[in-house]
Image (tube, rainbow, N blue to C red; front, side, top):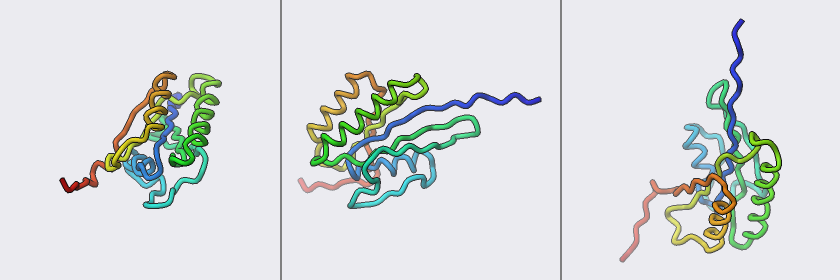
Length: 144
């Protein structure tokens, strides 16, 4: 009789501004279209959306995709993300976010102060944070 292997899983929270490339990054990492992408208006509606992705029959990555941070809704967005993190931390270790990915558009002219503050808060609270520069392949030409 063949013994069934225990399933391995990890929880990943992916966050960043609208248009930062969160969905494109997920599509790239999984080498397939798993999320809708777009230009202009936000593609992901308000909220945090869990999705299960299997790397193989025994390994699952639970990705929690967030709606894009917008400056005029920063407080609402921050509260939603912080509540989600607290909810996961209240459970067993297997329920925690094992990685938080913060996407920053490399073609953006600057990082907003509220983004820096939030990144600092995530680090201060002990989250495993990965900052990813997205859209690096697009290039940006500046007239100097």
